[in-house]
Length: 189
Image (cartoon, rainbow, N blue to C red; front, side):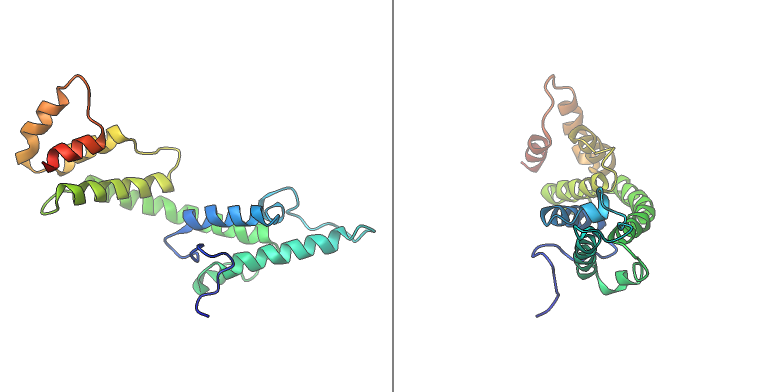
């Protein structure tokens, strides 16, 4: 049977994929009418049972949501939510845990980006690597995405070997600037 997954395609939460996992889990929980007990209007357990079975219905939803959360995380992540009484408490635990790690990871990625150099990579490999790191940084800090202009600046300033400087200087003087793809294609020729 292998890895148990509540939803095909949701990779289990580990130390490296929180943003992707959280996005997919939120969509899954919303699609199964369970988000209310995690991040919606029904995060606290009703005080008492009534004629409409509100408490029982809430417990069923909360148990389903907790099952979904627990079965889509790696085993070592379970220790963080053993004592969680509600799905909201479990969710908030992960938010807190990974927001701390994201700051460190974000700084490491920014440092890696600024120290990137083309060296013996092809232009296509180099551009792909820079864009990949920029994408990861944008995932960790969606409030400050790295745009195409900044990516070009990073590639030009930090990574290209001296033999490309003449070309870069010429291109920078053009009245209409190239897109990142056009820039890469011209360098590759």
